Amino acid sequence: MKRHSIAAKRFGFAFKAAAIALAAACLGPVHAAEQESVDRLQGLLEPIKAEKPFKIGVTLVHLQDDFWKGIAYGIQDEAKRSGVEVSQITVAGAYGNVREQFGQLNALKTLGVDYVALGPASFDGYDPIIKSLKEAGIKTLAVGIPVNSGNIAFGVGQDEGTIGKELAKAICAKKPDSTTLTIPGPAGAEWARLRYVAFQEQAKQCPGMKVVPGSFGGGVDLGYGLSQASDLLLRTPEANFIYTPVIPLGMGAAQAVRQQRRDVQVVSSAIVREAIPLIKEGRILAVTSEPGILMGRLLVQYAIRDHEGKPMPNLQKDGALPYPYAVTPPMVVTPENVDTFPFEVFELPPKGWSITAMQ
Image 1 (cartoon, rainbow, N blue to C red):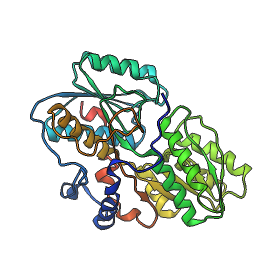
Image 2: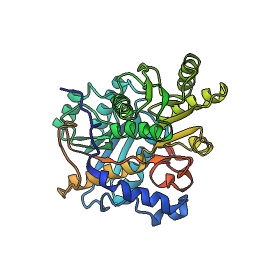
Image 3: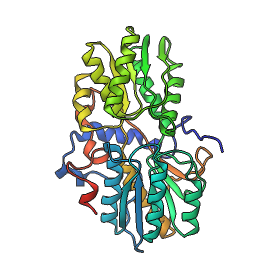
Image 4: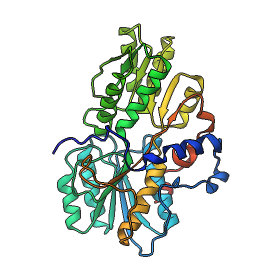
């Protein structure tokens, strides 16, 4: 089976991007007391409550960033609101920990869940176990990032290619005649590959924009971003920007820039609280939002509809992935709009929230 790409176009919910952008511009900082007045599904689905009880189990790559925490929180909170039982939330620990996640999937099978929400540790290798869950009457739902299995019932995620394109566009708008260093991300992570390929393709559309190729590998933590960026900056004194596919790497790169006192800006993806000051200071030029909370909520709402045989609006199957899916459109957060973006509604789970708080 080919390695599917959703880099070519915006899918599903892309027509909602303008509405979300307008909300971000008008709402201002959204605090806890104001969140109930905001459409938690941003108009993408009409929220309903479960008429027939069912159980959902969850296994995600890790909870080391607010993207995956947001997905876990979105699933847990939406389930609570909607009358769905979350039996368990587990984590594989890191990208590549496929064997650990297989064990968690088997454990969820013994709990008698009706659905499994899977944030896969790798793109490939899951089809046999997902097929075994299907044969046991359990539907597996992909969340956050894609998985290469035609036995997935449906998925909710984002257009990984568009994320890469938007970051290249942000650099082109700031300084077309520029040099960008790249830290592509972990090997074997399809989301990182899709972003990087799309970033390179979009950069070719910007006259004068030079991209220095990087190598896949390493982790997605701040320390790895710091070490890689430090080395790249020393070898490329003419650099203007650094591309990273996810914000911990981006924050590490920004720290390397500061240590070397260079006039270099970083572009990255996914919001964490610690990155917001860096955006305000201009050390980070642009970050694409990854609304994990929204993805988690949508997954639960689609599961309710699937369980009760109700219409599933905006799900599509077009060959880009081997199962029906819906995507949330990314927005670009910059120093110009960072003060008005509703992070706490779609991006950042409540401070102090953890798995242990809901188990």
